[in-house]
Image (cartoon, rainbow, N blue to C red; front, top):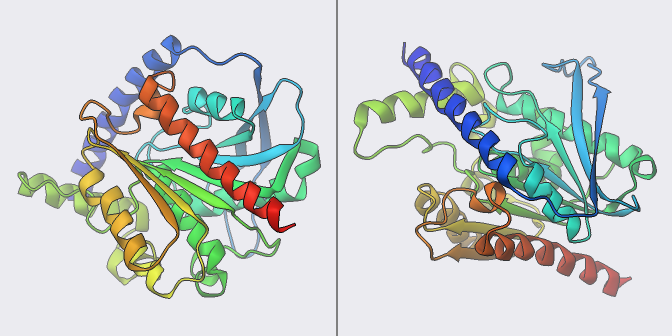
Length: 322
């Protein structure tokens, strides 16, 4: 019964979000000189993985010259239940304007897919891009991930699996056979802590419904007994992790989740010695993922420049070593 109520509530939230997002996208002005190309590849199942969809759709945002440039994989948010490869169009156009080729994808959404299925599809795409980097004009030797909200959690967890593949590869059925290396990740108002997600201090009944519903949606029934349930939050992963790529944590005072998501992530990075940069915009009007929704705002331009400059610093460090 709780899960049924949760599904109805969650669908209502994202149905209304879709209407609002469409209005926002129509008003935003895209930067000139950037083109968007759409692609689709089959999701070929094997003896280990049976994908929830038959094809995987993705976009690549290029400079109009279509030259090989460092690659950013952008993983959209939407509570794991909403969104597609076009949701963050405006944001991706702006990142591409700063010297990157940006890839966005449509991963299979909950309830059809669980968290592990979404991660496997992200891995499938990145493997495909690695094998066909010349075809898509991508410099995969400089590969970066960014994600907002739920997409930030997917970006974080995917990176953790790749970095600690000898420990987590079998659990998630994600094997790093192509030696994928992620140079850095930008987590934008990310919801990386799943065990306490759905907590509403002033609403005990709503908290009971949402805490259970989110976990049931992401992990499946009897989630507490599943191995991945104990291998997803940063404080599960950091204590025994291999060296993590640098993390950029972005949040703002207008984000209702920031006090127990981004700030907690910053605290855990400090505690476990994870190289990172923390940016907390002191503006109560800067709402959750504002820089993705409204990339032309002054604060958004600042945030998105921080993402690109953070990634460029990592590229320069690699270049200096060579």
